[in-house]
Length: 544
Ligand code: GLC
Image (spheres, rainbow, N blue to C red):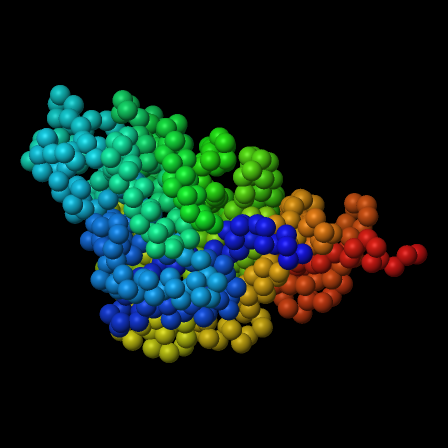
């Protein structure tokens, strides 16, 4: 019913699409993607059926962490274009009914941000307390044992003012002191700057890092650490992240966001389910959606996935709206993690579970991680821990638009190499191929957009075993879908045992041949096959 569809906010019913701007489309021919490039692809995004694009940072930055080190929060880096390009992009997106979500990076700035430059100039500078400065221990060593996510100590010695400053990430990314009111006000001001321009919301970078223990207590040792993990994981970050006071800050961000109509606040939070739920806020006054990375992190095993979905659903606060993420610019791509056939199942899962799906650019054509030779590695996480294979470059390669030069991404040599399979794997080719990954994504997104059962209905687990997962999605007006997916390469049978036996018609399947076929008591699936079936209403069934 149209009326009930319009009653839900857009960020609940629609699909979010993440763009890593360096790699989406290069319009000015310097080998690096830009805002004009994104504008060129809006028709594609509209066709695909997504509701919102979230764009990774494009603000002025020395690019030590490719834009996650910001030197000015309210401008555009010349690499990506100008403010006029941004205004144009926003307007063009809105004209097409697309929302634009910005990446907001409040935890740290670039070390070249004027705030930090002032802060480190002298111990008595007015902005000294905007960052986290501390004396060393009597022996001169760092104030505590905290580690940087990107390797090494999280403390950097400043010889000029003879104190250490804290950086949870690179030393070029000093952490702001969020206990300082002036910092808070400055950052809420940044949010208002963009909200006034009309952006539709924010994805807040490393939300759970914002506040640190006032006493700077040592983090405890992680007894489960293994050598192949980042060195950061040697300790449990119980004092450097996820402090109770963070929720007050998140609530303020929510207030700032909600002073405007129909905007969304999303938080990047990598925490176990129970702690994650806290980010919805005790009074439903936290993030609208703390990102749920379960599908990014879980082993690809049906029982475990089914159990975790139930756990997540069960842990949600009464007003909390679920969401699911399948990939992003920090993690291996889904097609590389589970293989291409299972990446199709993953798409079905992402787009039929209850809650807002976030999809990473290129996953819709099955882009894979690209091996980057050591001498071409650009990601600081990879460069700082060379023995651990942690570079995020492989999942950040340029989008494959066509079989032409540089995959249609740029007329120039791209900043990061393109998958050599691109002549076979690209948007242009897949758009016309009913068997392609893109066609599957397209159909699933269209179905999700038009069916309240899928975009807002209830979720009910039906069955899972070592091979398959089955669940139902039901809308209040009586429409129901059954999703059955085989998470292995071996054929399987799902024999319904419940009462009544569900019957219906397959609407979308990983293998298009199955579409329009009928399902009944026994559902047979080939390896790597999944179906979404519309269930016959009880009153539609022939009476016997
Ligand atoms: C987030 C971003 C990541 C970045 C880090 C530091 O985790 O997603 O790309 O490196 O924060 O800003």
